[in-house]
Amino acid sequence: MAGSWTKLTVKGNVKDLDEISAVMSMLDNGLMIEDYSDFSFNGMYGELVDETILNADKECVAVSIFVPEEKPIAEFRAFLQDRFRTLSLEVCITAEGICEDDWAENWKKYYKPISLGRVTVVPAWEKYTAREGEIVVRMDPGMAFGTGTHETTRLVMRILQDVVRGGECVLDVGTGSGILSICASKLGAKEIYAYDIDPVAVRVAKENALADGCDNITVGVSDLLWDVDRTAPYDICVANIVADIILRMLPDIGALLAPGAPLILSGIIAPRKEDVIEAAAAQGFSVEREENENDWVALLVRRRA
Image (cartoon, rainbow, N blue to C red; front, side):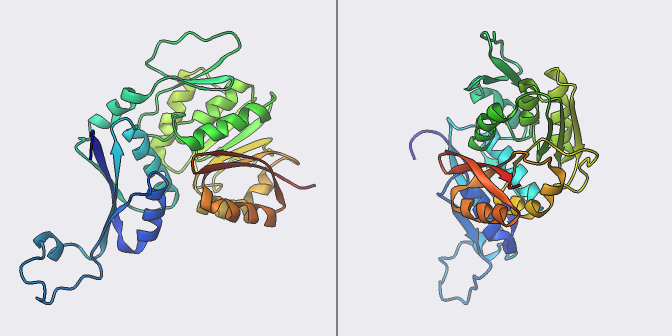
């Protein structure tokens, strides 16, 4: 292969191979799968079988992709951590050729200001002068997912700019770095409640919100909607997660929304779009808008009166 590449590998239990492969294929379709669960050696191969194969753990599987040097490897890793955490899968994520201490610095290598309509996402360490009328969201993602470089985040931010009019109460399910909550706050939302299952992501989101002057964002730990504040209906909800988890959430989300509130669903790979649309329709939601980028889809749905 020409150029420099990083081998990004996810190791997990063989029973989770389909789900691991599905998540990895969201980043790249060229998967290398190491699965020796069905391999048996009876001597017929002579001495041609590698000893590592003979001694391989039959309960373990590894799925790898090769990431070119111009891609943000740390963003890829954070994306995987976020998706597997949401799916409650125990995996180990490694990158061949990158030591643990290099992950954080990898953010800075390719993370530059990103313009998305009225909103521009700027790395916290960069000097940047806003243009007149420009909304600046400053981010230091750490190891939480969400910098604005990934399609799923960009799709939601485009929709948010049209649905936040000012004064709304917003629910952010699976907040990651807190980027969507901060965006909603900067656009004029009155109060935002952001949740993530990962305490590290919650800490990062809190730090980012405070550093960017957004004191109207409440961040907490919750497994989907389990520990969400239910004292008032939400005027807007965003959920940038994965299709399977969206399907699990849809039967319960309606009870938390104000009448006619927009529900923005993202993290949906194109082949799963119809599954989400059908599940949403079964709960009384209809698609009002669809945004696409590469193989990713975001949907704006509302519950019919």
